[in-house]
Length: 576
Image 1 (cartoon, rainbow, N blue to C red):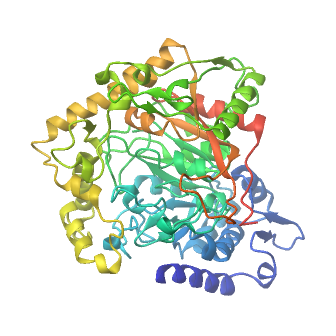
Image 2 (image 1 turned 180 degrees about the vertical axis):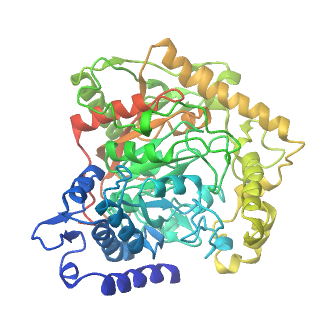
Image 3 (image 1 turned 135 degrees about the horizontal axis):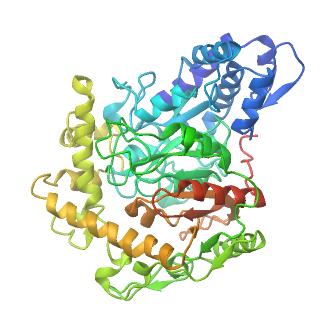
């Protein structure tokens, strides 16, 4: 909590001494232009809106930084969205303003303030992953994604809170909780959970995880960079009414990002609009020799421009599949005979509305377009029977019926990551991290224990390699070959339409892309009900377009068409 106080106080000092009297007189979101009466409101402003204002001279990048830092200072005590801020943001903005005055504009991100998840290396802010062992640590090099974004002119003004180490520390850890950052709160209902069994400070409305959409939803910056191994871009985007792009694994460099496993890890943009997400994605992609897992899988569009085909009518004639089994209606797990999946009445109503919109816009709905590995009655060929090994229940000797890809990859890739930090690394291996956590448990290092770190560290990278290879191949078969790919090819689809972020698990193992778009609101009605009188507010619920590898452009086009036909995003009332 001392770091939270430091963030707020630092911002107060910065805004108090570096802004003009005229700026201080305005509400934090209002940016006065230099010598003019016109103001620019950053709330719900798109990146093209900001670029138009910058090009016309209505505002400067310094003004945008001031407005966003003012909003962070105002709403941070309620939302806890920020783990650290860039104290050089003003000087970076001044440099970019000078470039603009000299006629050099790097592109659509020139002078735009954004934030990145605190597992992306930054040499100008600490990179902690939310882990106490890394508290205050500044790495010796920037993540490639950070380098690319800054080269494109983006100003990284803050690091976001996150679920500690991308939610591969413990089972049961709440989304957006970490030892360094504490609990992030959902801006659509920023109250703590009042139920006795879960009244540890966590939010009453889930934030998703492990990336944070809190600050982007609350207009604390123009957009943010999250990372996903299995759901950590899509889930927080769904929970915070955002557009999120989970790219094809390998489209974006993983170098300089605290990992779970290179087999599934990817960074991706989280924004309030599709065009903003497309702009950010274009600045993030590209080959990188440092990423040993490979970054040459997909062809990047000319000039990295994913906005070039965004126009009305992109849904007309598109073939959209509805994977009913498991994702909309319950199906049977062939290994257990039990029921799996399905939607409740509120979720079903939202998805029926979404399908009606697609039909109205001229899309061809293929219903059902079930995923073969979901409806396959042979247990060995069923995606439902082969989950992720997680928690002590899947420790060595109890992990024959699940995939070891994440726990094996965590040991392999975390050790490689800390080696890349050189002598400054706070710990030298996963084993040292676990030992540090145990020694510092009284300081809050592992409030929810560290079961996933434990089962990862017990993996032997030599003798268990063949098991990892077999499980990785099986994951790809069930999720891609006999999964998404087969459904797409058989039905000649442009995309599959999933409720909320429910495609995350299968798309993550396949390494396939998804774009989620804000759409509806549903009751926040957990199984253990809130106490009488709490009056929980409705929570966001989006729709996802999922495709085969390297289909980002088509998915972005479809998502844009859907967004423009609906425009259902509503900013949170807690951060006006």
